[in-house]
Length: 351
Ligand SMILES: *Cc1c(COP(=O)(O)O)cnc(C)c1O
Image (cartoon, rainbow, N blue to C red; front, top):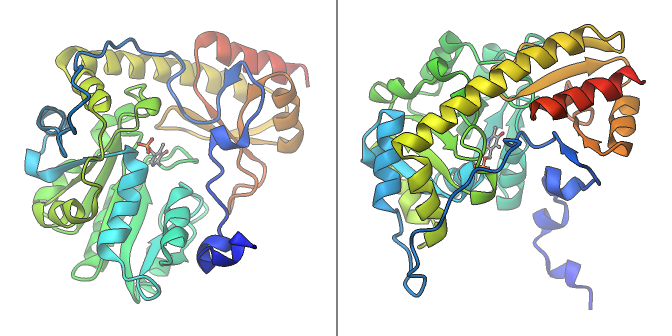
């Protein structure tokens, strides 16, 4: 029996997200998933695993709300920001008719989630400076319910211009939600648009503990929005999305100490990033190192295939971007420890 015949048609056609873990590699230097390079130390304090967890653990919600500068009713917690990307589609989009719009090069999960759910997609590539093509977006808003904008953008590292986001919010008024994916905002915290929630009922902000908080393995993310949006998401989220140990550790990560530790990570990585960018720029095989507001650098090489595979063979795993729209020749390098950054430079100098 051909089980594949039973699989939903859109899933048969689906290319799964090429996550860093899925791509594999045999490395000692992992710089392809924008993770924090050192494991933080947490102890579980909650032992009662015989009971179901709180659906939306109160301490996690309250602490995140306080950290982000919103009210608890403006927060929902989920299994990573990735789940939030999908919850928005499940709550707001009719399969086969409604459309989500995003602007490549950008994060790959907007497309994968939409395709999984049978929701249509429209892409309006960014301009050559990686800013929004607002005219293009304006002409493509028919049936669009959700517009995903990543800022700082993954993989390019730039912030999206705030005046452009305001214009986009105006264009989307009364027709679509504008979702600003701030997965990396801790590396450039003054650029958050969170205070705009007061003025825009259709603004949604995505956050995560996976990047600056060094907890990618925890799977914990947040959606910030006004209550009507949060209420719609509460309807479609799983009954117990967060395991008790996840809520336990998230609560600790969001304590005063936890937040101070995260801020030290950011200072450290931002310094490391500047150093790595300078060293890369000095190499002949590097065409350009782009300014980055996040914990990775987007780098254009004369021969990115060769660079990627040579470093891969030495156990240094980077992210080859060349299959993404507008990213031919590009490699994304996550900022690791000082030793890891030095290993990259040493390996590149040998090419
Ligand atoms: C890493 C990342 C996410 C996913 O975050 P999780 O909380 O780990 O699911 C979402 N958006 C962007 C842009 C990311 O880079």
